[in-house]
Structure formats: structure tokens, C-alpha cells
Amino acid sequence: MKMKLSILASAIFLMGLLAIGQACAQTETPAVKKVATVLSDTEIQKVIKDSISWFSAAQTASGRFNYEYAPFWDRYTEDDNMVRQTGVLYILGEILNRDKSDKYSRSIKHLMTDSISYFQDNTAKGEYNGKKFQCLTKDDKKCTMGGTSLALVGMINLVQKYPELEKDYLPLMTDYASYIVAMRNEGKGFKENYYLIGEQSDTETTFSNGEAFLALVRYDQYKPSDAIKTLINDSYNYFSDIYGKNHDNNFYLWGMAAIKDLNAKNPDKKYFDFVKKYTDERMKPYKNRRQNDSNVGAYIEGITSAYSIMEKSLTEAEKKVYIGEINYWLMKTKDLQIQSDTKLRTKYGTSEDTYYLRVKNNKKAVGGFLASASEPYQRIDFTQHAVSAYLQKLVDIDGGAL
Image (cartoon, rainbow, N blue to C red; front, top):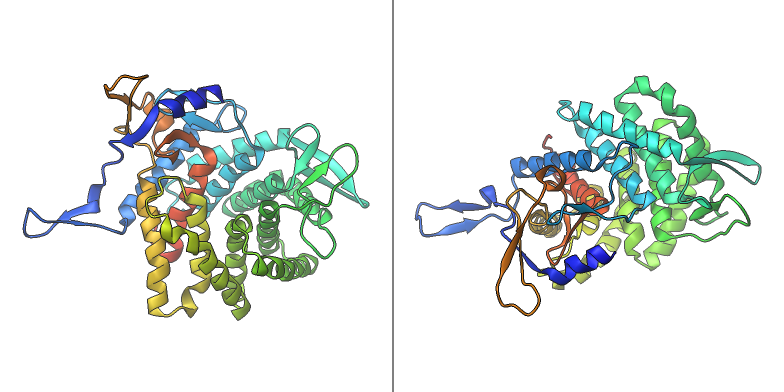
């Protein structure tokens, strides 16, 4: 963390960001330029391609991904987070499922199998209320609901693309699903952690509730079960009640992804009503944040999921509002993705002289997203959330291809 603070102290603002490419198109009068407000398919495809390369460079021999990188200093920090490790597996699986031409499938398959090996090495056995399971550990004292859930979703994506791998992963996937079921608080959500030693706690978090909800929806699509369907329905009723009254930002991200899948299979007005009201509340604060330079990938990922749920029931005027929000933030967020020509303008001490720092190692840096223009470090979760938004916009909303 000391290294990060020195970076932030020296960073004034980010200059020379990405070449916009097609963002500026001349009219017939050369002196007049029209600035694009929508990224082209080609631009989004490159965003995704570069991000895959960045994840690949960040993966270690153990299968773990380096969590945080300072591209102008060529240093990885020592920070880590198991849930965000599984977030990488999740987004790689989402890309894999949409890669119909197998453009990236081979390289992603390799990244995912190595990542799963790391998770297997960090999995523990547990038992609660007579139910046995396996769960992904957060540390040597407890398992994580969020991490186990996203790891399960990632593995489902992998075996759906490569059915021959099911024999290798089905036992673990079944045990991970059993863990989620066992950790449900009766009539409520899901326990955040399972403690390997000592008493259990009923504590839930909005993040882990959303992640568990998504995992159950995906698992039921993969291995249909009346018992799981009932649990999904009961969970939805609980979540729509508590988060319908309190529009929590953290549940929104993963909750929208889960409801998107539910609605795609069985469209229902109740989903539209819940999601639209929730989304309108989620968007309100961002109306006054247009100059914000922070990475809002998680916010816009949730909005893109929600749009797919609402689209068929929206008026044309309403569509323009939501698509305008998505396009604005995708365009703006693109400037936070590091390229080889990205530069950072800095000053040292009391000197008025300006210096430019350049990317030290293109292989490690290009493709990852910064935390913000004033916080020049890349993190796997910032990149994961941003890529999910671009991917959904390209494929699910616009009907494009990788």
C-alpha cells in the first residue's frame, strides 16, 4: 500500500490517453469535426481483445491472477481478493459463451482451467445442518459465498462450451452448489461466509446475495431441479421485497445478471416492474457525475444487464434514455484502458517542471483498466466489470459478434 500512496501522490492527471480511432469523423468541410458518441463494433472488439491479453499476462503459474498493477512503474502490489479472482473466471466464461467463431476460445480455455486449478487448491470441505459440501476458502478460517458462487458460474460456462471437461469438474460444481443451498438463511438470503472452525453466523451481504442468486439461476439452467427452482423463486421474492424498498447498489450488479437470465427464459412483467424502478433509482446519482473520472464499470455492467430485461417493454423514447446512458459511459470508460502510448503527466516536489511517465511494460499493461485518471493503477475487478459491460453491449444489445 505504501507504493500505491506514492503513486497517487505523484500523479496529477492522465494525459495522452487512447487514440480515439473513429471517434472523430470529418464532414465534407475539413475544418469541422463531428465527435462520435457511440463506440463502433470494431472499437469494442478491440477493447475486449486487449483485456483478454491483459488477463493472460496477469496470470501466475499457480493460476492466480495478479490483483493490482501499476503500469507506469511496472510493479504488482501485494493486495489480493479471492472473490475478485473468481470474477476473472466469471468474465472469461462470459466471453467464452459468446465466442461463436472460437476466436479466443483456445486461449480462454487455458486461462480458465489454470484458474480453476488454483481454486481447487484453495477449496475446503464443510458440513452444516447435516449437509456436506465443498467451498472456496477466503482465508484459513472461512469460505466465501461470493467467491464460491462466481467460481461455479465460471465452471458452468466452461463445461457448456467444452462438455468433455464435465467429468473433471462436475463433482466440484455439485459440491459448490450444495454449499450455496446449505448456506441459505431460512426465508431470507445467504450467509456471507462459512466458518471452518467455530460458530456460524447468519450475516448476509448484498454482494454475496446477488452472487449466490446468479449462481443458482445458472446452475438450474445447467442441471434443472425442482428444488433449485423453488429456492430461486423464494429468493427472488425475498430480494424483490427488500431491495425493492431499499435500492441497494451492490445487489443491483449481480441481481440484474440473474434476473436477465430468468427473464430470457420466462419473461414476466414482475421482472420488468422491479428492474425498471430499480434502474431508474440507480441512474439518478450519475446524472450529476458526467465529469467523474473514476472507473464506473460495475455501474454500467448492471445497467447493460437491466436494459436486456426491459428492452421489449420500453417505448422508443425510453430506449434512447437508457442506451444514451450506456453509450456515454462506455465511451468515457474506454479512456481508462491503458494502451502503449498512454502517458502520465506528473510534477515532483515543489518543482513546476512537468514530466511524462510512460508505460513501462506493454505486455503487462495494455488492456487493463485504471481505477481512475488520478489513481493510475489497474485492478482485475475494474477490468472485469468494464469488459462485461462492453461485451453485453456488443453481443446482447446490438447483436454483434466478437
